[in-house]
Image (cartoon, rainbow, N blue to C red):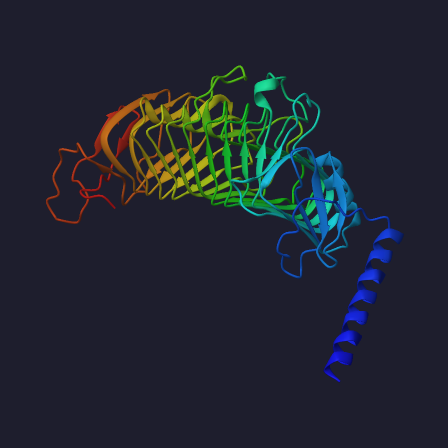
Length: 446
């Protein structure tokens, strides 16, 4: 009886193998004669992409285990797999170097997840000059994570403001696009640029690193109101111009991010090399709120913040930022007219000035540690309240600043006055010049 059972099971197994082989032949699926079928990924993965050998890449169907494509072109392989994914589909990309680029146009509900950020590399092929490593247009619910995006900067000289040669380019509709734990490196132009005329988009960049970019690390261009762009827990270093640049910036939040050592060769007329840049042009809105900077650290740059130009009604705000050891902490250029609000922050250790405003722009600085201040060109309405100003170095020219609210002013480390009644307020004003004085200097830091 046992012998008959074994024979029956053998025949059943043989028939199943034959049926599978016939099915694969009927579907014209090529099973390679070499290569490794790796351990199947989690069941929610639809395809696994991997390096097959020194010249080919494979795409493995996770349900059947079959190699559906083995191709010499990583670009074509990614295109085939993406076009065959269902909505809500997932691609797992094994560690390896993939010489190609990825286009996501009109796609919805796709996850592309690398095996590890350091070792899963999307590398722009040599000689390609008119593509981005990842191009995204008119999509929704796209999640890209655990990838290294590597450009070909050494083979492409800087060519001005063009829409290609970026690590990532996003335009059109982008509803629910997330980049999680990516590393963008060695790009001829931007590490990542968002430049869309469609409002109401949501783009999140989290836990990511941007290095050695030929222009800016991240550029966000806001043309219409209603955007929701978040950069959270990222690091930008070693780029040639601006770490993170915003044009307009309404609806942009940058938080928990470090931007440092951006001191390359700038390509703009102004030698910025800046951690954060804010600009406005004829395409950006003149109303709205933003951008917002929360818990951002910037050091070893030309400036922590450089405002080249801005609109009167668009106010950047800074909460708990630390700009230290830069040449300038915050610089407001001559063409900038919009206000700036800094609260609860640290602006210290600058080579020249922690805050330099040489434009007729309103500035509000509160509850901030600061040392060196330069204000000029009639900054009417600007105020400094409840700050700790240690070893003050002030250069005030043609400006009248509000230094107290009628009850309290700022703490000045070199204030020589007394507090006879012990109320914590100095008995005599702290005089800066004939037009500027703190009438109620604090005796201790607030």
